[in-house]
Length: 180
Ligand SMILES: [Mg+2]
Image (tube, rainbow, N blue to C red; front, side):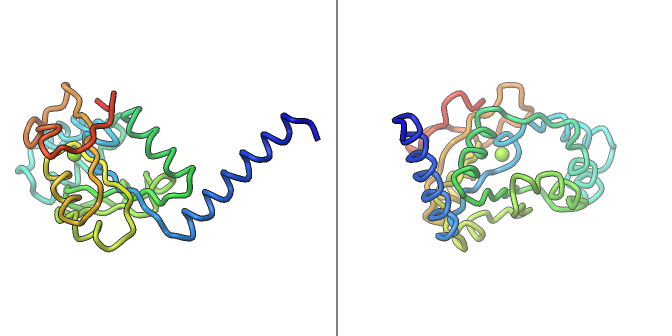
């Protein structure tokens, strides 16, 4: 066999063994949604423009159905895809309320089998075998720590309307470079 063929076969073998092991071990990786995997300021602005009271069921219905206005964040999304390629289950956990969120869950099904609307993120993180949780907000980091999962900070875009709960490095957590 030619040397190059051997190298390629070895790499394919290592990949398959890794993928299968990760899969059998049921390993998961968690991602927050807003300002982590996607830039969703425009969806929230659509919620505001709808004139419904903030955080009312109708407001959430508009936000959750405005995903055509959202933009993918390149570095975090690539990271999620790499994990998926290695056999990890990608799980999305957002603190949004789930009113009218079925289409949004459906929209991301190709990436994440599980998509939760849950403020208490640690309750989900402590149930599965999560190797890491990626999020932009301080609460994402503290929820991961509470569940004993490794937190990784995603940088928030400067363009985001949301400015609260953002102190990267405050918990000595790793920060994903170029993630804003
Ligand atoms: Mg967020």
